[in-house]
Image (tube, rainbow, N blue to C red; front, side, top):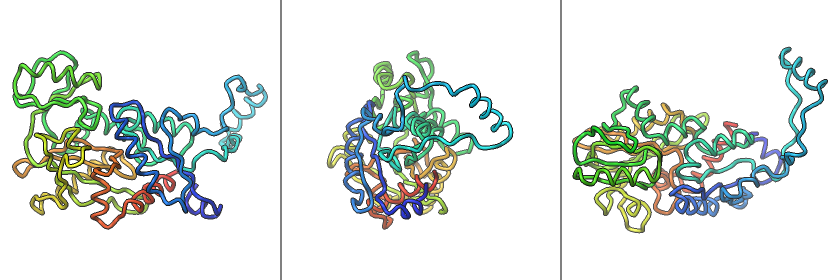
Length: 347
């Protein structure tokens, strides 16, 4: 279904904003989801806010109870098989429930939201959804795997090691320890001496079954949003410089009022601005992201190092991507419109 189809039906677009989840970023997700739901134009959209605990509502009444499902008669099975071998279409599925949304706006963060699992479920349900697909979501969430993709394309990343609870070799102190799959800096630690390393790894392993130990690179942290809409070239948003009040951009710096200062455009040379935007576009394309992404980079001694790619950037009052879009002349409500349009046009 396209936007043209919906216009022909002369009705509001049904949007389910999916939020919450069970990850360590649940509270952030709830704020993002509520902000999105409130910003969607009520004259254009019929909005339903859904916690992941209510996922069964996405199917409406189209899914029969298990007891009602039976195998097709043998004659039908043979007929369908013959049609498939002959290249003819199989019988159509029953029409979807009118309660089903036209698009699901994913406002989830962390495991169960950004890692491809919810995306896979929505694919099975046949529901258009915002943002990246299954593979890109899973790759971006897994820091080690995405680093391997970036290294293969000569995109600069920070050296590190991929560890389980055992610790053998590491690239000298200071170190930064983080869960391999996680966000919002949950479970992350800056380690300056060997005695603290074991505890930092244990803390990271509370949030994932694998920890990542990286050489700590001190520098200027920047972030670049990328918008990807059908029929348009990738658009890199203005580069934001992040100045945290803490030693690094931790949870409090990200979400507490006044926890950090966001400077647009970033105070780095113009050549590095251009390079950072190009790297963000490359990362978006390499992972196969869709709709929107945000790439975090450290600038140190005029060198750029990719930290990670976020496929579902935050949409809270202190979030970075809406600020960058606003600076580029795209108001928040229009940004949401474009993300929804992208999801439907790709269906």
